[in-house]
Structure formats: structure tokens, C-alpha cells
Image (cartoon, rainbow, N blue to C red; front, side, top):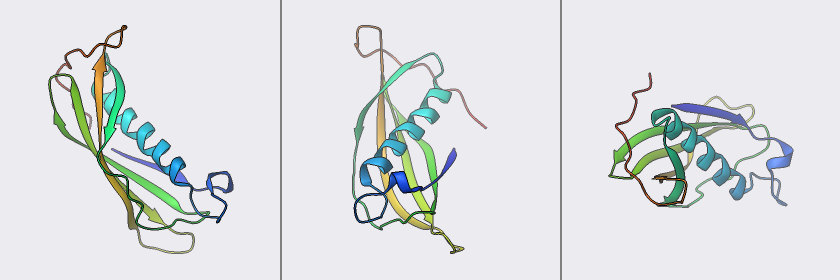
Amino acid sequence: MDNYCLVRPEHLNHHNFLFGGQLLKWVDEYSWLAAACAYPKSVLVTRAMDNISFSHRVGCGAILRFNIEWKKQGYSSVTYETKVYATEFGESGEILIFSTNITFVSVDTEGNKMALPHRRCIV
């Protein structure tokens, strides 16, 4: 699953580059959307990201592509590999700026872990 967004002035830090916290917010949100589509009857919460390392700065006007792929499923958890690519304003090629594995856990109304159903395949 791919999602796109445009880096706007309100997403920048005091050095006029993309704020890392904003990128993490998008990674969490877009990865959760992929999981929610695959497990529509499950309440999923973020458990972990395995790596947080920013490899390139990103300027205003860049278009980001979030590539989210199902990786594995456990009894109550599911992990997605999320890669973020940037195309800077005026450039034609993408560069990989961030990647992580993000894990979600299925919980009940009390917050206790519960079994995940088989995932629904998304085209």
C-alpha cells in the first residue's frame, strides 16, 4: 500500500527541514491505516518501531511516498515494513529517507491482547 503527502511549511523544524516527529506521526498513521484495512474488525494499537534513524533531510515542497508492506503476523500482533521515499521539489528521482518495521497489537476494550483473525488481502 502506498500513501503520499506533501511537505508544507507547518511540517518544518527551526532549520526549515522536515521535523522528525512529523515524519514519525505519518509513519504511524499510514502504517496503521494499512493494518486497519487488513484487519477491519480488530482494535489495533502501536506496539513498537524497530528502528528510528533519519538518513536525509527533506525540504518544503518535497513529495513523500510511504510504502507499507505486510511482513508477519503473530498470535495478537502484526508487523509492517514501512519505507519512506522523498522526491524533492524540482527533482525527478526518489531517495529513501527512512525505513522501519512497525508492530501493532490487537486489543479488547480493556486493553488486553487478543487474537488477530487472518488478514484480509487488499488489492
